Image (tube, rainbow, N blue to C red; front, side):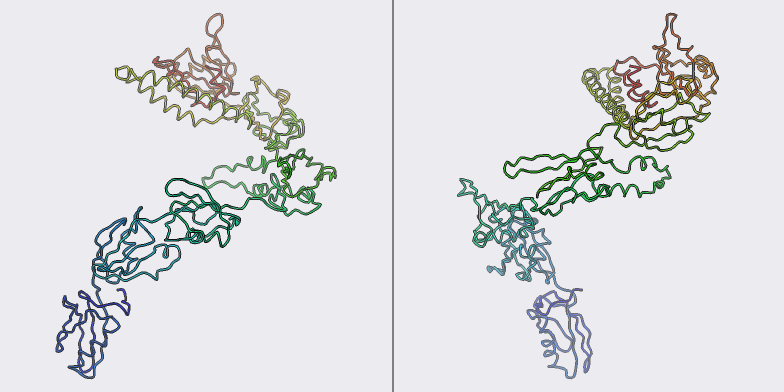
Length: 632
């Protein structure tokens, strides 16, 4: 129950809770009837309508005192009556509203949704009969928190929202840029106050105003940011722009790039580069220490921790040969670059590289990721995995090759299977992925052209299969886009390769990885055979022998397109092994870890459909773009 204020006016429908004790005891809940009266036993009717709540105790005491003496009395209002008011004009939801008799103009205004798009917020009227009780400016409440002109409602009151008045827009460096409704004779200062005032970066030099003259011409004007300018009356359609200060820093120099504390620093006369970069520690970035401090613990799914990715490089290496000072010529307004040797300055303390700085200079320190330095000068970390005597992560020495690094790591173990080794490279993976993306783009265009060509045929029986092909083509593209390149480089080693001398003298890059597995015991046969399986490797065995172990090709096999995926990643197809006496595919030697693939026959609906099915098979075996090029 909401307590009623002292000035609440009692009216028909209100419930009064009366408690009397002393010479007489009475407890009653009396509702004010239509005539404005309540009935008290032994006292009779008492007229209470129109009385303020603060006068109710005295009025009832006087009425009861005409019959009784020596009593006490309390009275409060129980259930409050409801009244009906009208919301009219440009309201969001105009209509008749039944509200509590305690409601005010603002209460009902919010209940009705307030002014509509075309309604005024600055001159809302509360009408009672022919009189206007109050005019309420909703900006006072919403912007300034002032509710002093709010008024209580009575039965039959009308809340009228007139059409919106003149408007002006304010934007730029103000806290609340928007379109605002203007009061009559509103000044620029009032409009800016409605917009929350100017921001901290507003320029206090001038303010730009665009104005429409008598619905004919538009012109621009400027006023000073002073008392005279703030006193300018606003007009309907004005557009006010508050400029911000120019983002220029006075007597400041900038240090940016691969440094521990990039930022803006105060300039002083005689300042040099060494004042910004006093030692090599100031070039170690915070990101380096943050990544180095990571523990490399397993993720919640208990997957292996990516230790090599923490170890490969915690941050980009510094380019010691080149850094630059950018300077703006105050006379010509041209920007010039002054390069210097960072290594000589910081490591060797070479005074010839310690240039004087001017106010406004920007010093930039680059990393090797931003400007690629010669290969011999790059810091490179390479991971050696598998059957290597001292497998691990190594810092590559200048000019060191893969063969030399493996030799430094102790060479291979007796179980090393060099033919199946994998050499992967970050830059190669990026290049392969680009080729895969290009292939998918080309394939997508071919599928789209095929869809357009097949569209007129879809009304026929053959068209149904054509529509199915189009649908499968789109599904295939979606699955192929999930393929990611491995970055593997085939080293073209012989099956009987062993020893460090078998490795090529390939130059190493940062992030390279060389994995040497042990000799596998099986050969795989997959595809359209009667028994897809892995079979023990037997020295000297040929393709035909393993196909017989798999039960031979089934009725769906496409024998003309059989191929082998060698353990080193090479692909050898039946078409590539055709000699003068016919196909020699079944006589090809098989090595540990090889996989024999017998594809299924494809419906000869279209050449594009064949390409799609071949692409699907290759994506399943993750052969990548290189294998696709070999077979196609």
